[in-house]
Length: 329
Image (cartoon, rainbow, N blue to C red; front, side):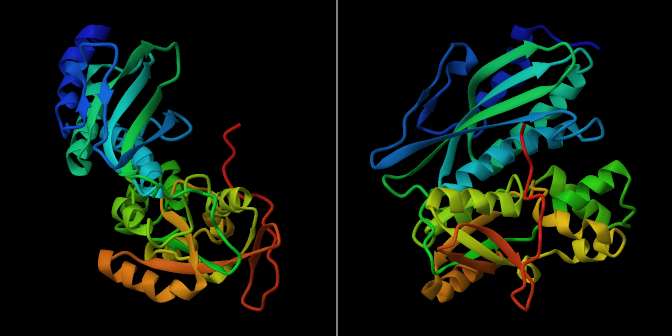
């Protein structure tokens, strides 16, 4: 598989990305140095996060390389969204196996460039290496928030309502479409696959939540698992009303074909929606926010003092969920 050398690759494919969306608060020196400068303006604090993707785990050989680039950037943007942060820049580390050549890498970089322009950030450095078998990609992303306003997982309080943006479970069904297990017809199949390959980081929602939410997290490992992280960090528990968890129309139609997957929708992850808690008396503020940004925000439960996350049916009976979410190890 034909591939440029490391320095040719940097100069010809990735150095142009150091200019796309470059802001006044970064200096990447054309990727010609071993470091970059990131300096938020006065009154702002730097927020830093990192996420990696591996072929065969987070995407497969059928995924468009441009979508791999988009998803890699968007899952990291989603981390910033959950903190209420605005993006500034990112660093990329890539381990290229022998079967990934120039054409694949160019398509991958094109996906990055498109989303850099859409989300107004720039590449400021990183590393490229050769790997014997696996394609491994990692991004470290930099954002900014007004000082003292970053959203955290801790902070949920008994009496809070639990909300989630958008819909849950589309990515799981999109994976089944990609694997050929789910034979949904278009446009549902295309919609579900796009939700897997091209998630939508909820940037504006996160920034608006800085003055509404007590705690927030993006749904990457599974709705129940990520709510569990919030509860653990906050020293509280939660009750989730299973029937309230929002599903897209495409997901509801798909579940008629694979009804055994119903429980997996709340545990699979890869949704990259924002789950947050807000004071139970602030429901009208949440409704106003949803209308203002034109995004569904659904109340799915409440925070309680008793530790743990319980899922209940409409009568209040507990529904057993043996698996809560994705485990990285």
